[in-house]
Image 1 (cartoon, one colour):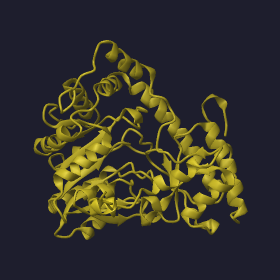
Image 2: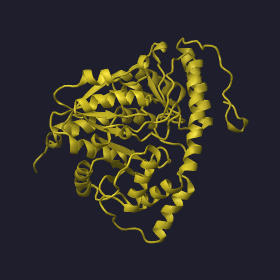
Image 3: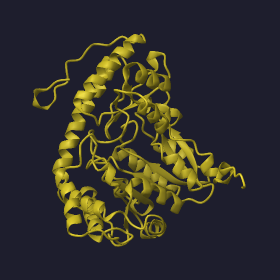
Length: 409
């Protein structure tokens, strides 16, 4: 019998890909009992009943077959109508919109379609953990643009211009941002758009948190002059409609790009599950009131979380979107991994070390406030105790944050 070293058979690009920093930490969480997890980027709300009901009815009616590779035309039409209504940008649902298995697949397809070996992708950092690996797997080279507290975790047009080389092909935008919660305003994006046009850059814009914007109004990059034709817009239903497990996303852009993405999609996924598409259709038709109620709850929790960190003496940037806070923990004398691991061991509270999102995240931790108020209150009581043990004294204690129904935390 031939003994094989299977590791040597694996594509070196995959073999050398580092494991996700989030996954490594979640393995530690799984081994710890009684944990309050503020680490997962997932709504604590169950998908609204009318959306689940639409899925059930679709099964009762016998919707169990393949759909078009592009996705249900009715869903694509609803996506197109939603984008036009919300951002005044028009897409043809027949050849400019592709329904994907979550935004994750859409990102992978966009990278594989646009990149040739050695092409560089500009990525703001800290950044979501998939961006750099998807770039590498597509043969590209991630080029990070560091951001920090001093600039509100936002990139500037000057920074983009300074990062461009003859190999730069794609600028990845990811606002509202995971993990920082930073948002970009229209004026900042207009300047970046000018740089993109001047340097003939393609843009991949991950707007999965667009509806979770609390400060100002989200600007869809495709709606800006000259941007629609060079942008691949990615979005989905996971965050705003509490539909993470349904795995429905979409890409919108130039028909040549979307058509090329569909070629890969038809050979790999074939189509997104029909029952999930039926649920997404119901979300677009009737899901806005429920979505607004969830966003209101996130916003109340956002205030509570930011103030709680500041009260315990840890600087915390005020997030304008998504459902994450990104406090700085260097005042405890611990680096971000030590902080997260010791907090987990000593107080059974799970956060994610900031360096899981790139070197710029060192000294910070990501906290998801998509958790119940009871869990948030207990987690912050434990964290405050932990921080005091490490010599950080609380600042002026604010008044309790009032939430709906007279409850306080």
